[in-house]
Amino acid sequence: MFERWAERLGVEHAVLLSRLRATIERREHQRAAFSGADVIGEDDHELYELYPDAVPCLERLRAAGLVVGVAGNQPRGAEAWLREQLGPGVLVASSASLGAEKPSPAFFRGLLELAGLPPARVAYIGDRVDNDVVPAAALGMRTVFVRRGPWGVIHGDWPEADRADARVDDLDAAAEAVFSL
Image 1 (cartoon, rainbow, N blue to C red):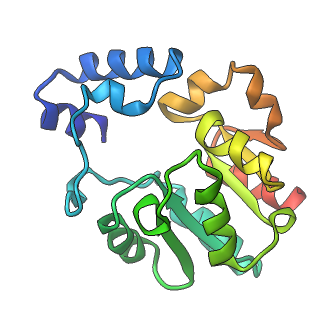
Image 2 (tube, rainbow, N blue to C red):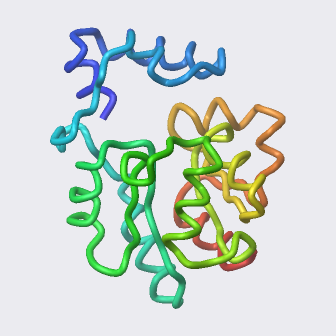
């Protein structure tokens, strides 16, 4: 995915990854790594990508009778693509449809409303401490931190990562963690 973003920006893949790492380490908004460019638009489906274990994880959780969902800081157009990839029975939301961007509490309150569940009954899985773990935990959700991808690897060393109820390396382990919370 980052190779496609680099191509879109007209920079080498290694340059983009260096910018991204520096941005994460400085705790800046991810847009700083993209030089303010609007990288993903409404219909840029070729820039979207799911981890290979995402769908099996969601299916496993859903088969156990849990309400499952996927949400992120994305344009509204990403929702249709996600619904296509994930199939029926998965709640899908974006920052655009929720009217708030992570880490805003309004984003997470919107998810709780969509799920129709109280915070204590929700396990939020994410690969970012700043945008996922800390704000979800602040609202009383259980949290699973996935140490994967640029943010997950770097954030794994942040003291705030200790706020997560579980720390895992992939989504199979995340599903296990949800079952044990």
